[in-house]
Picture 1 (tube, rainbow, N blue to C red):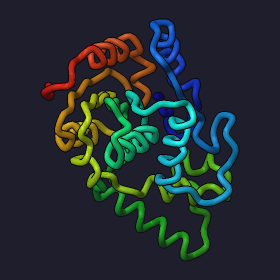
Picture 2 (cartoon, rainbow, N blue to C red; picture 1 turned 90 degrees about the vertical axis):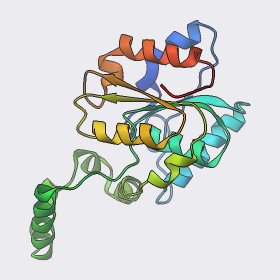
Picture 3 (cartoon, rainbow, N blue to C red; picture 1 turned 180 degrees about the vertical axis):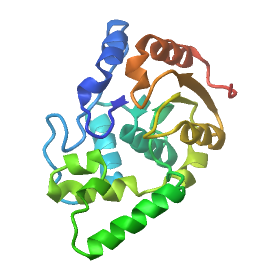
Length: 223
């Protein structure tokens, strides 16, 4: 089960899906609302709603358990599913989001300027992320609500074998986040790829090798 990142779609994992489909695996994916061919949510969705949607799709396809591969936001959903249910046979977290970023002095000063300028009625567009600005205004609440949710308490609840994959130069979900996930999830392995937030696509062969090796492992000890 492949879960794309924020702003992505079913095609985000197209190469991996084709690879495993040709080798006889059952492969599934979905477009998270409001991306791809999925409509916009009628309300301000939370992570809980995206998790429920994913489980509903699995139910409709007759999938009791699956290896769940999630990139970025899809990793959030994957963590939530694995922590709360037994539907994840194995978990692959690819540049997964879900942890509160470390905030240094530079960020705090920027935040102070943002609040001061907003209070004075000045234009503060430059202070928002590109992902936030790319969303229709009526859906920006969905984005803000989801990215602010910290899943650190859910990591120790993940009991299935887990592969943590990260990009060495990722600035959106930095390496320290992947290393913390590896530390907090009991039965986990970690793989470093050269590249940024989309290192799984930039280093497709290396990613597929790591994924193949992980799928062929018997459930067992961490490495």
